[in-house]
Length: 225
Image: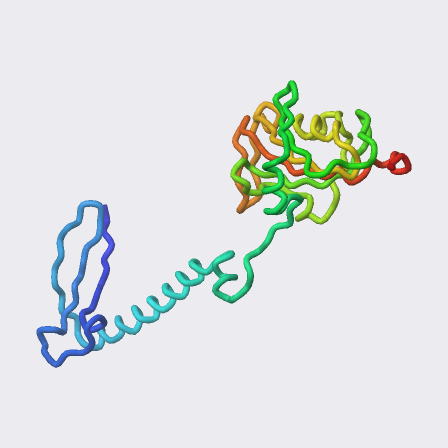
């Protein structure tokens, strides 16, 4: 197998020396089985050229490394910018308040806590609903959100257009209400879900958490109290 060579001139590391004994270079053979190290004495012009090339490469590598370390939120913090805040339906204060809200468990295994009970009607099966949602894995990482897309999610409830847990959870809500749904694996994504880059992947039959707000039910707005 061919081996690569790393040429490390001593002058590049220790600076110039008047002693000819120091005008050497280590030539290290790097390979799967290579272990030989031998000395080679290039002339001074070659050594200076090599130093210049290596210095330029080192500067480039350092720059690329710094950019990698400062990517994403780390870059924002280094630049004095606040970390990005993703919009939520239930903020930290809301989560604390939910600790005192009783959990409701349905026959299917769906669990939920009401963040806010709406004052409007509940949607009949097959009706369109306009809702906002923030979908998370159990750790709290968001993998999908209508708030980030900036538009309401409209679908026919109870018609199988969304996962079973979301269908069931919204059917018993009232317009204007907000709810946190704890959806077990069988009612979530049986085949899993590949999320967008930077988002957590949802494994097959794994539980998920949905914060949902039922904004309104087209055609039933006039019935709201």
